[in-house]
Length: 339
Ligand code: 5GP
Ligand code: MN
Image (spheres, rainbow, N blue to C red):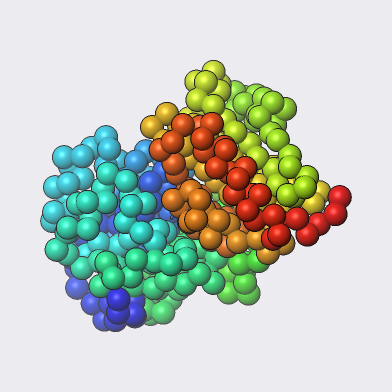
């Protein structure tokens, strides 16, 4: 993989460009992609954003979101666009299997592939150019860096600014996580200087849910949460029946895993959701417990040191059993705290 700076001189030659990201995109995946989309359009590129799956409705306010193709729903159109692509930008994921059904076609495309990502252990051999930097707060910050470093600061218009702000704000936990560097604050200052109105973005992302989602949260925190004090661990297990009963939609479970992490003394918070086709897990940690390694070792996943996820094909009970065995195996790293 050559450094991404090697593409800067080529940015002024219009091309057919596709931008994609991981399945069930979060605000960083969608925001970084649409920020890049609005930037590349100004340079004359024919650019399409393709999502491997659907996405949460609370992302639909983002400028350009209505033009994003859903690969699962619009497979023929997306495939035709992919086959014409000269450049493929892969944003906010480290391995092709994070794009689900799109993975095979992406891997086989003859076009130039460019990675911009901040997850651990990327599959660098698949990409021609790129940057993988785990110290970066978000992929949106990396797109911002690319725009500035390639000498195009003047292209940061309102559309670019809103999309990139949404990504950096959410991936830093509203500027709370340790990844919130001085560069992040400088970036936000730069976006504000272009006239960015940030408060409506927080409202769109956080104050935009149906009552049923909060009833679901209440039910889950009361009935589906188990705390293992001896392992400083909290686990939420959600059977499929809950998703049906509370009409849970894509994105509705986002943030749920953070609640148990705020219990005094908890180092590891986990959520395992039975989505029917697979068991999806999310892990969050504090105080030096590495959930990237944990998710890789037991749950076919990965991510960051303090936020990772995985997926399993086994039945829910089996995945829960696996989790309980895994925390026992990691007792030494988890049990340092006395309640
Ligand atoms: P979340 O728990 O919010 O789904 O994801 C947390 C972090 O872990 C994100 O950065 C996400 O990209 C990563 N992640 C989530 N699920 C998986 C997975 O199945 N495989 C890998 N490699 N990373 C994942
Ligand atoms: Mn991200």
